[in-house]
Image (tube, rainbow over all chains, first blue to last red; front, top):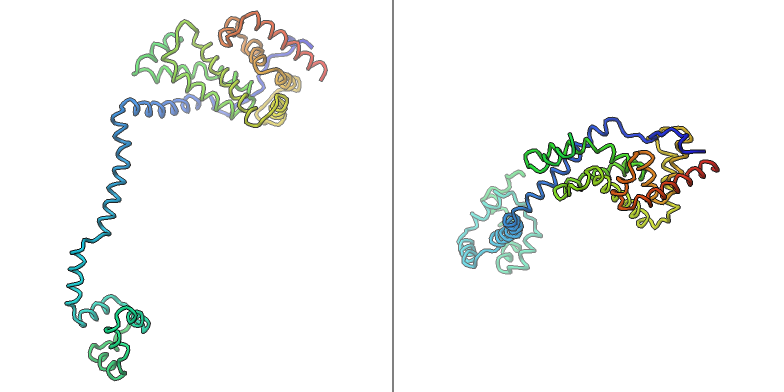
Length: 142
Length: 179
């Protein structure tokens, strides 16, 4: 068989409209590469942009550190104000905060501060009733 | 648009995109079919065609105008094909015979092929040729390029190309006769 006897035919096919879309696809890719090339044309700007990332991170960490670490005088002021608070203020705060106190909470407290909790834990039922009536705690609904 | 006009417009930033679009439209089919006949698969040919034009875009400013634009584009496409086929063999540790079988299988199973049995058989016969000989055959037989242009594309002498084509044609005719 001679090759010249065969008709020259392209047997391969492409999807419909392939050659209409191909230039656009290639142009889109070259546009992306051109943008990146423009970036590299300004090395100072590129360096500045690279330096911005660690700077922002550093500022973020500094901010978080400052928010979490209180200065010693601020802590002392808090302790001073806490000691001025009366029982009424504390109870009012607990009521307003909707805190459910259980006997175990007082037991935990007992382990930490002996002299405060001993009054609470050894209280007689009569005294407790009186306290409830005084602060009208028995009428509270949660 | 003539190549010279495309190159002149490409040299000016204002008309660069327009010129490159014209260049793609002028050469996309030649480049695609040149690649497709080598790699058989459409997706591979599509990827490689895009890569060829990206390379053209990047290097067109340095293109020396003593060469013809289309032979320069063909040379980039040819190199892309050879690199692709070579890396495919290396990646899968395939000997030449295996990649031939894989491409032949694509011809048998691909839905985006048309043609009678003898045309399919011719394509499979071509796959048996070494890559460079297949390139020479395709450029001469299908694209009907002059030997001088093929010589410029492949960097091979015209005499060697004629011998290579003659040998390829004989091998194919033998294959078609016996198989």
